[in-house]
View 1 (tube, helix red, strand yellow):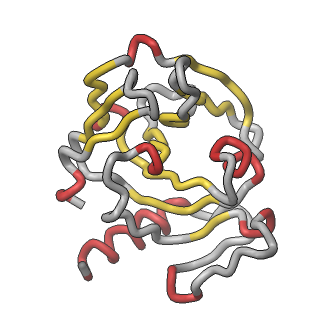
View 2 (cartoon, rainbow, N blue to C red):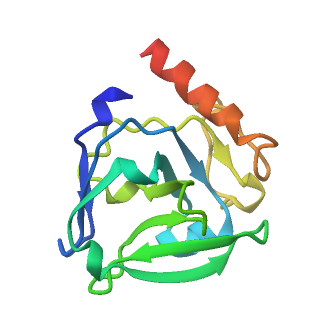
View 3 (tube, one colour):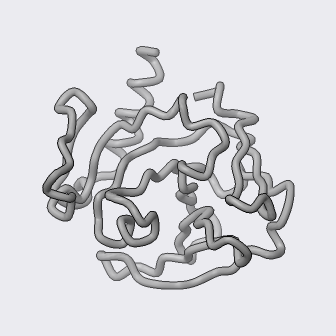
Length: 158
């Protein structure tokens, strides 16, 4: 989505700011218990971008990093503002890998259209998912590349 280039975001207190410099690879909604906890909500939104597609314009040096492990046992590096606690992104230990920008931290979220819902086995029971909102997975999809293809198809139809 080329229109995402130049989109900005940051933490609640304004100490950390960033700008997207390349199109995202995909966006999905995750209902796992970790995303529920980190967002203090029913789910988290993950905007996958290349690590070098995020230009931190303020406060990158202040980001606090906390490491944990995802449901698959892989290391998950969590970056957040030490002043207000806003989660900015998740990453793996692989410096060349994509990162997951926490989409709710974008200044403008009106353009976001997730391609799928994952980890629905952990979803809140009162949450009703629109069946037209895309594929739904009880856990992780077998191949994350499928989500990237869905994202590209969605862009082509827009």
